[in-house]
Image 1 (cartoon, rainbow, N blue to C red):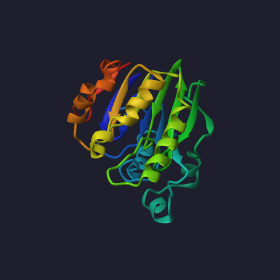
Image 2 (image 1 turned 90 degrees about the vertical axis):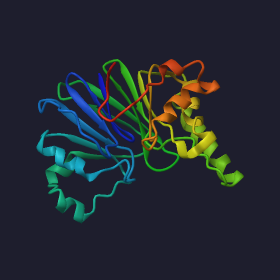
Image 3 (image 1 turned 45 degrees about the horizontal axis):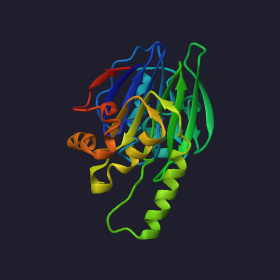
Amino acid sequence: MKVTYLGHSGFSLEWENCFWVFDYHEGELPEFSAKKQGFVFVSHKHGDHFNPEIFRWRELCPGIEYILDKGVYLNRSLKERYRLTEWDLQQIQAVGARQSYELEDGQGEVIRLRTLKSTDCGVAFLLEYQGKRVYHAGDLNWWLWEGESKQSANNMTANFLREMEELSGLEIDAAFVPLDPRQGKDAWLGMDALMGRAEVKRVFPMHFWNDYSIIGKMKEQPCAREYRERIVEIERPGQSWEI
C-alpha cells in the first residue's frame, strides 16, 4: 500500500483495487484511477477532521463510498450545496463506536472494519484488508491538559486505556496516531501507550498542527527507546511511503 500525508490528521492509502482517505481537512489529494473503488472515512464532525468538500470527489470517482461517524450531521443546506441525491446518500454509511462492519473493494474482496470509541468525539477506525491491519485513531487519544481537575484526568485515563485494551497484542502494519504539542509534557502519552500494547510496524504521527518538530522530540523521549525507529518522520504534506 502507498501512504500519503495530506495534512493534519489526513492520510490516503492506495491499494491495487481501491483507495482510502482518512479525516481529510486540507491538502492535495493524489491522483487515483477512477476504476478503483474509493472509501472516505470521517472519524467525527470537528472541522479539522471533516471537510464537506469530500463530497465533490463523486465527480472524479463515481461510486465512491463514505464512512462517517454517526455524529456527522448532513443538514439540508449541505445536501443542497453539494447536490447530494438520494442515491448519493445511499453511498454514505453512518457508523457508531464499538461496532463491526464489512466493506467490499470492488473486486469482491472484503475490508473488515471495527470502530473504537473516541475519548473526544466520534470513533477510531481499525481495518483489516489483504493480510494487513491499519489503525486510524481520529481523536482517540490520552488527552490530559494542564489545569484540569484530578477527576477529569482520571476519567480520561480510564476511558483511553479501556480502548487501548481493544488493540492489545494486535499486529498493526500502519497506525495513525495524535501527537499534539499543545499537551506539553503529556504529548507522548497516547502514542507510547499504543506502542507498548500493540505490535505496530510503523506509526505515523498526526494532529500536530504543522509543528513537525514534535516528531523529532517524540523520538528523543526515553519512553520511545524501543520503537523510535518505527516512528515515521513526516516533513511535509504530499509526502508518500510504500509499505
